[in-house]
Amino acid sequence: MYSIKHDALLPKPKFGKKLKALEGQTIAVEGFFLPLDITGNTYIISYNPMAICFFCGGGGMQTILELNIKPDHLRSFKRLDTDDYFKVKGKLRLNSANYEHLFYILDDVEFIKLIK
Image (cartoon, rainbow, N blue to C red; front, side, top):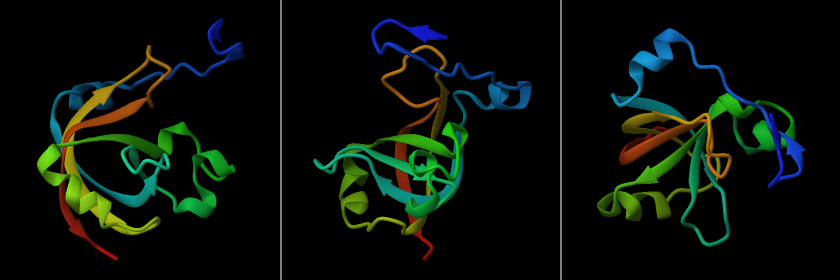
């Protein structure tokens, strides 16, 4: 899909039935911690570590989730380092229209544990 605002062709996700059935459900996921901005307020969880993450050419947009963290869990995320492998839970939201956000979003995210 062409975006006038971004002056670019942008991918439009197609979500399968199984994934659509999970929308709005609380799910737990494990992955690598990646801070997304220098303010330390935007985070993603990635299937791959930083060296082969989605913007470095090793994965695609389908390998990352945007995290909207519960305020009382934010302190746990500020203690993580890039590429720490951890587990979180949150409500899955699928995004196919707002290109200011990722395709997969976890809302009300709670930190479960640092795995390694």
